[in-house]
Length: 303
Image 1: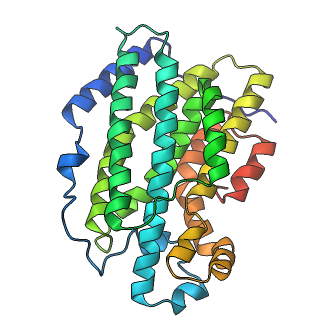
Image 2 (image 1 turned 90 degrees about the horizontal axis):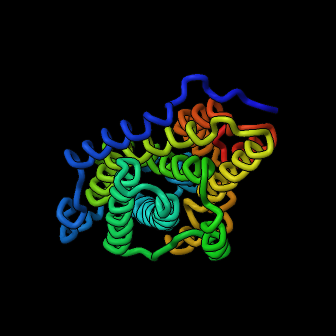
Image 3 (image 1 turned 60 degrees about the vertical axis):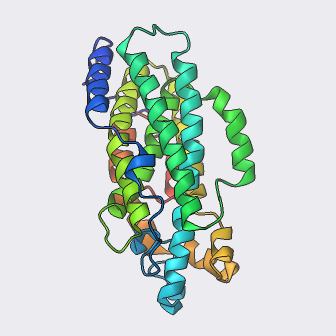
């Protein structure tokens, strides 16, 4: 099955114009998390780690049985798991951007914005690490097997699939953090970290989206098949890695029961599907969704 690529594509000359605007935006509105986040502020006992409706157990029988204290503890661990996966992917993203610009004209605005984005992602990585540390919960990260695969896969992370994967992973974090930053029930540190990430990632997502469309121009069927599968596999593993299974053990819950109820949680599945609609619309319009890859997106409830 071949999906038509949008007819309105940025021209190659638009790359410099877009990069110039994004560089100007970076100059006007960038944040230093070491200054913007009050790392010494106390962690309130009555605030959730993330918006409770985003908890993998919200809406389940087990959630209803938990005390308020247990719910808060669970969401702190879930927030740390989400942040640590974001940190892992930021590091892969920085590697990809640096490889991509290695042989390009360093005077170009495109390369200069890519380097600006690397600087942003460096700060975000430190910010995510400090947030998890400050919440007093373990450093989760993806499953060790996925972590090792990332080391290998990162070397093949290039072209349209690289930018599509970056954009998709950032959109997944963005769809959650937009709620976190506005929710007064959530820990102040989570809200501030989410706000900084959402505001700065808006530029990165714009940059990645336009690169995806540019780099798919003229792609043949074989290349499209590779781009589609690579993007879908990345999205699948990022979604699967968001909340590690040991979160439930560390939160003091029965891990077997918690995992079973989380897997069957239709409330969480529906929330992911609704929040990911914009991402899936873009991937479909860009020609990056096919019949085989739809199965992977369905497995993580994005469609």
